[in-house]
Amino acid sequence: MLLTSNQRKHHLELSNFLKTGGNEVIVQPTGFVYRVDFGPGVQPQIHYVGKDKVCTCQLGADCPAVTAVRDYLLAGGQKSQTPEQPGFTATMPAICPICGSQTHHEPRLGNKQRGVGWVCEQGGEKHYYRARTAALKKLPRREWLVPPVYDTAGSLLAAGVPLWE
Image (tube, rainbow, N blue to C red; front, top):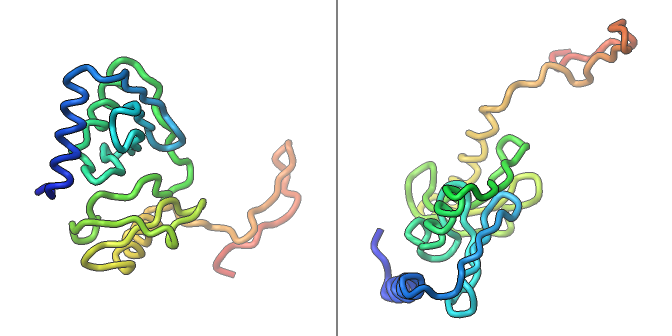
């Protein structure tokens, strides 16, 4: 990945700060991501790294916050939560899973049920929805519109309604 001059400057400042022993870096799991606080000597001070090993800042996978999270976990740090809801997107992918282009955050597409919304530079929203559809197709199929009800002894109390009726 080629960095812009602004990204190179940000990366150098952050790397130099860490090499000179700047403030203590604080890593803590926050929901489905890791919050990395470099202290007031670094801008941006707070970084968020997902389980995909990509930071939400402009440096993405090249950000030293990714290394800080790795070191934190190797030292026995607490892992972040794993989404229980299948198909939930806790972090935005750095590259589009459909075509490999860069992605950008799109708040209008995200919500509490789906997670983070994003758009692809090449395919826009279409690639977001194609990726969501692919994730949902991996879910197990439901057999019942209304499942049958059984008592504690296992006797059928109410018949279910299958999806095919």
